[in-house]
Length: 292
Image 1: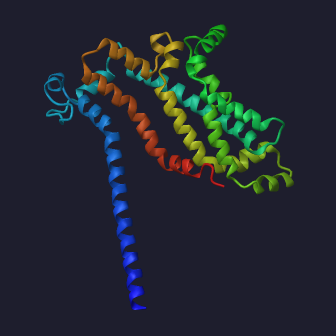
Image 2: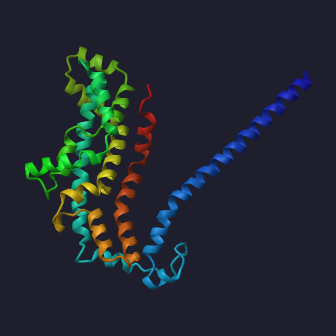
Image 3: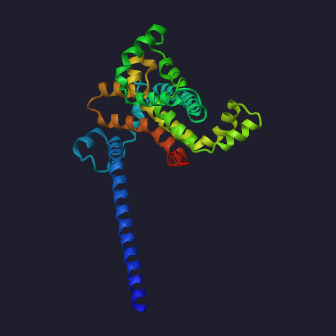
């Protein structure tokens, strides 16, 4: 009996040591992944804080000997590429597009998740199939449509479509989240005489916070970093976004890498702040999506 207890104890100790080793290896892999992910950002920040002479004569990995914060001041005060004007345009487009995506995709997702109507599943499959359609295929027809409406060189083509659907991926994400909410809530509200609009706005939408935050973060980042759409639609310099302004600045200052890196850092700061503020809700929305 004593030998059997010793065998069990040895087995438990061995299993514990194995678990500790696996946990350590997991942490090593995670730390290595974080370091590799942050390396490009580190190089970009370091290059943006070096003078032109130091950047040409030192390694990109080395920290600057003299911190050249004047690079940021020069980017912000450049008259040929007004940073604050581009920043305002990007904020307007990204904010209103994100609000439109969150509004329309949540309503469509509610219809697919809670309502029963003929052809619902087939329509949902058709919706998902649009995710496999490359954006370049619809680029020319969309441009012809916006030109017919007279919306070229305005913000409307970059904002208005967001209020009509919100995108297949966002609808799918919110639908899966809604399907995880018990239907008892809907049935009890219907028995009390509540309409579908009341059920959606007052009962389900307040519980969709994590998923809505996830959709909002994805949408804002996408619209903030969007380049091809504004490049085709916006022609006037005063209507350009930060991405277009940065491309214009890069074309005019091809050899001034310190200024280009400073501009890239400034463009990324709002995205980093947004992600840090909504990180908890973002992770929660991803984890809870699809859980019954």
